[in-house]
Image (cartoon, rainbow, N blue to C red; front, side, top):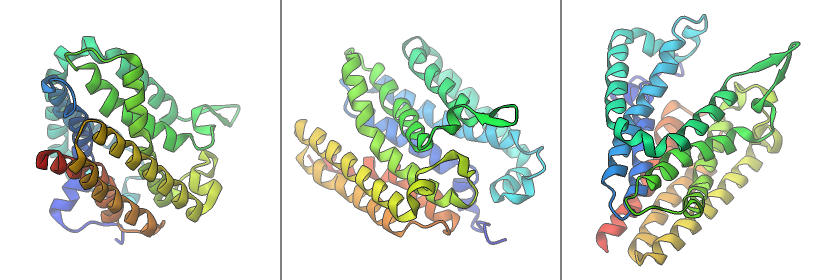
Length: 288
């Protein structure tokens, strides 16, 4: 089938959601790098990686009994590897739980609201046959993804800093990460335009593909400016330049994005921006 990924390694990275789980870890680790002592936050980054793999795995395994399994390449792959994935998802979930257990008293009040909001968005509600709820709010999809991801990879690690961060600082730094995630979410909305319900009122549905690209590009510029100013403020001048390579990569992907693309483009390259940006920044930090 045309949507199949034939390379075995890429199947694990894409269908197994290993790559996006690594993106969660990379973003969390990038935050931990600038804390006073990032040991707890780096432990959380590992737990978040395992938790991301678990969360995506549970959603896929839960759908294996549905009638539309054969319509989606990732679900067909999960079905073919069901026993292995049950074991790996269970193992990763248990490991994430053990790693997170000592941290819960400090972070539950941030993670719980994010989880509740996400639940009320992804779960469709109807009254009298009419759809209601968060899904009906225009543009909310990209905004919600940007906010929830940023809370998970910025706000939570900052709460684990031994030197207590103010609520204002946590909110401010979390908001700095939102534009990057939102820009990537809009690119995925472009990909999903053919399959998303028009009632979701995503950015491409309202502004068209070209308009969505312009908005995504603007958000990337905002995110890049935030990172450059942040790094220069800490004296990491080299990193303020090298990180721009990651954003240039994201800008090229934005220009080339279109609804009809293979799985590699979005699931590896676009998701890979979340790894490329902190990696480029970290190289600059190491160079001094």
